[in-house]
Image 1 (tube, one colour):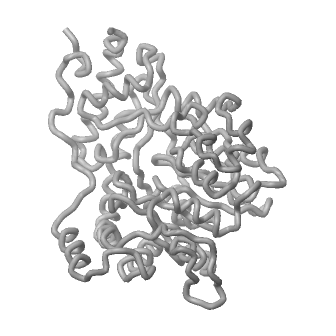
Image 2 (cartoon, rainbow, N blue to C red; image 1 turned 60 degrees about the horizontal axis):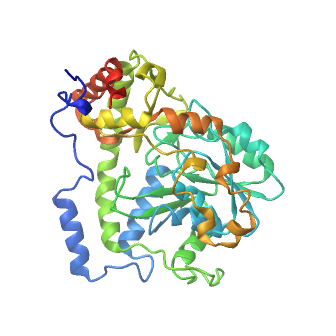
Image 3 (cartoon, rainbow, N blue to C red; image 1 turned 30 degrees about the vertical axis):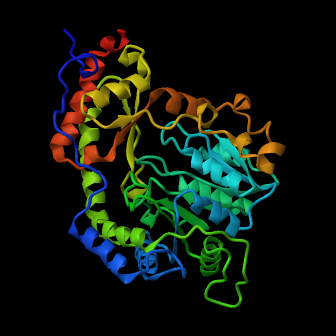
Length: 411
């Protein structure tokens, strides 16, 4: 008789975890106010709710300026363009990230230089970053992945020594702090996503944070068709329309009110999860970095040892967790095995001129290929917004799948 739900057994969790996004009457009223106002779009930019959200979100993270725009991919492209990074420049990015990180560099006209990750954090390996710097390197783009942050101490030191910009891809790190300094507040820019699954969402949207007033003005200009912002000293530039409308800005304002409580709840329950899950054979928890002083995450990432799960793939273990009622995915593959990484199809000059350097068949990232390609599990954040029982169910499901993993080998 089968034990695992994927093979016909009874699932561990029989009722759903909390839904996402959360909404209540405040959201309905906020949207209704925008509808009644007649100011639905983003022009003239920025309109009042976009201004208000950018101000409050920047303050929450600890930045001086925020610029709200269409999504968390164009934020990266705009950051690069605001820094004058483009044709024949190089930008160092991790080999394990969502494809948008790399595509934004290509869209800006620059060459993404992919480097491997560290096994403890799944983020940029600072040693490999330094080894990859050339005369054409202009920026480092660390990605804070899951519950972890990149080593900002090392990366900032490297950037300062080589006179490089830092653009933090903080799509997963809304609310995170490193040594009491907010994610996205270290280098020239910090990029955040407000896509539907992210910790602060309006369905779509993105925010750029910066400490530099002139960079903020230039970013505003770039997303508003190149119109100069705030001062005659900033001339018109070659921009496009990446504005976000007031309907989304209103939703982001109400979501921001809920964020601190949600962040604290996720952190508390993730700590409980780690205490419970540490003893399961083959479940490897990523070490908690003590320099992260405020913890939040989009997904909680753990690793499995396939030999303790009957040698099956992490994809199958993820499917088994889903069948047990625990929201999970195998996460991002390494970039050289990512079906969405298709740079030559862009037909952009950088992708054509450097086709050999962007050829996945010529890339090798041993750590990313092992961790992202074989061992990672991404637990959904709602597992950690359902009290202690929700965490217990996730731990029980993991233990059950490990115990009966041989069932997964059956056709």
